[in-house]
Amino acid sequence: MSSPGRKKYILFTLMLFGPGILLFVLSRGKQNFNYLEVLGETPNYQLYDLDSNLISPETNEKDVLIFTTIQNSCYDNSDKSCNIYPYFIEQFFYDEFKSSPKKYSRVKIYSIVTDAEGNPVYPDSILIEAFKKYDPNLWTLALGDPKGVYGFEKKGMNFTEIRNEEDGKLEFPRMGMVVSESRKIRAIRPLNSEAFVRELSERFRMVLKEKDIKEYNENR
Image (tube, rainbow, N blue to C red; front, side, top):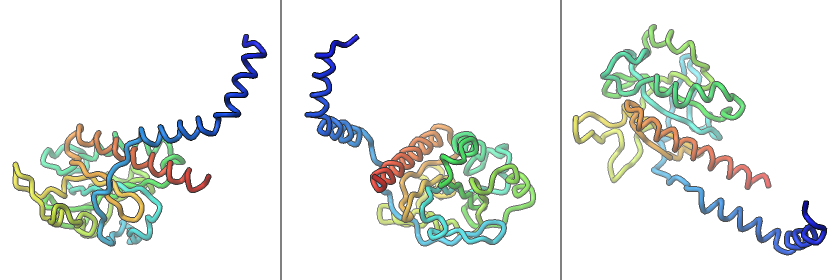
């Protein structure tokens, strides 16, 4: 058990240096947190869900969003030519969102229905049926031109025009993109590889941590 003298010494030290120690700890924590850079901004996109409800920056002003494309043939992960595999999204994002709805109440996934080249198409009945198992408040099929989301400038080029150096295919249809408030693009990774999906998941969680820190500082 601590002696009375030791207790008084600890109390005196906290009274004298407590605020400084607290600020030091907080500043160290801030320094140790790696903030993601802003890669660009999405255009002022307009998409729609299957019930014709508008999806836009204004309707998701405070949300952290994950955008993907999805093909009609890729509802069950069996088509190996798919740009993305829904299984990866389900495993690394949706299942966790579903298990903690309060924690992820300001998070949404939008999968824009396209063909293999990224052109907008209407979802067929099989894809629509497959998506009925997902909570539409967390993961929604979106209709509209994906270039309205992916069409930002990167290295002097429109991202929707950049092609993969190996296969010559357009890059954007295979990409998942994390977008924070004010249309800020925070992370982009391919969604046809588990390693890349894991990376996107890690960066997504960093963005959520940033949001928590920002809201904490605003409400102090």
